[in-house]
Figure (cartoon, rainbow, N blue to C red):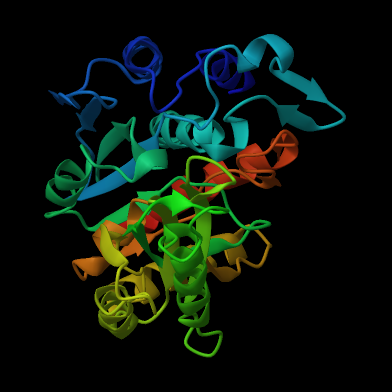
Length: 366
């Protein structure tokens, strides 16, 4: 498994580098086929400018199908590996994308190999590997939703939270605000101008105030820009906003906040664009039953499996919003997603793989 992990981490797959994504997906397919044989069904969906989506389905020994979701794109651009190579040191494997989420991908494929080697009953397994998760899954979302339509369950191999699986995730909205003012010389004619930057400062305060700790809603203005010079009343200014919600009802409230944005200076115009990239992932009855089954499997191995609610979103959000059973965080134990200290604890890799094996057997009635 570590050999496979090393090979996949050493295939850089930045979300915005189509050539590397194509190369990476071909290598992942080759390793899956070498380990599991030719799939009973295979579909490649073109991702356009984004990473392509590959579905590999292997026939099981029991009725039904389980969808196994893994993304192969990472946030790390080409060249990162040169200064940060894959390594295993003191029980930790490090390298770009090792935690988010190439270890989970490897575990998912090896779980099916384990089921076969042990001769255990299992439903059919449909792997879906997508290369655009880190940028919101714009190309893969419809394929993810279609692939899980007839599934007994969907397992998402994103990293765990200190070993806990993820049963709740926040929904994500991505918005942009543009402000247009009136340019003027800041010294010669200071009152003739209407600064878009000054107006944007008001708007940022309004947006920040729209967050609600009690409702589980956060609003973060993470990007800002504008103006042409320090001695010019700015004619334009913009900001990029990240919104996270736990309660689906909050989506409408936040939409109203953006629709009602105004500047105190009537000469300034404000416009907002954007969308809800992912709905919240809230535990539905099917997901709750799935977690209980996973807990029982873990208990049979002698350890307690916890659940966690997190602020980050994943492709599991799409599945959950359709009312289907999904269990997220089936992947690695480690830390450092999107950071230079990204790593996985290799001693946990066999146990996490065994958890998947046991859960698939349980779903087959074994």
